[in-house]
Image 1 (cartoon, helix red, strand yellow):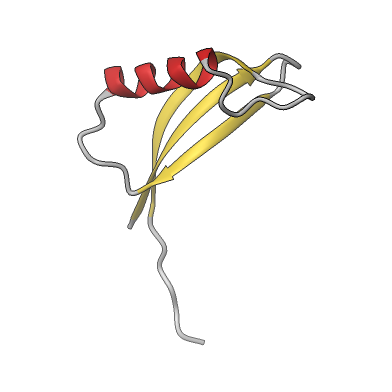
Image 2: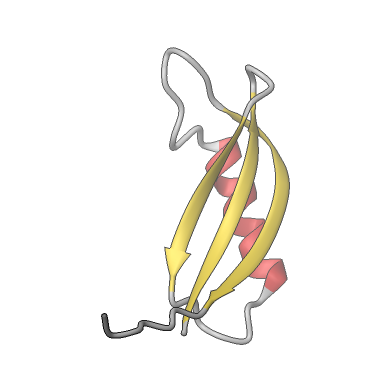
Length: 71
């Protein structure tokens, strides 16, 4: 079982982008995640000449289970 924290942002070009963090500390502190997202937006940490983060769109934890079979 693998968990991933996904922070989804709206870009200034109206597209969305996701930052994923593997194996987040649980329980996830949503207030801390929101604050981190606000900082990423305010400081334009992941901006480029093409686009930048302008708003928080979503936060989610994805829980993925993989079951392998022998062949």
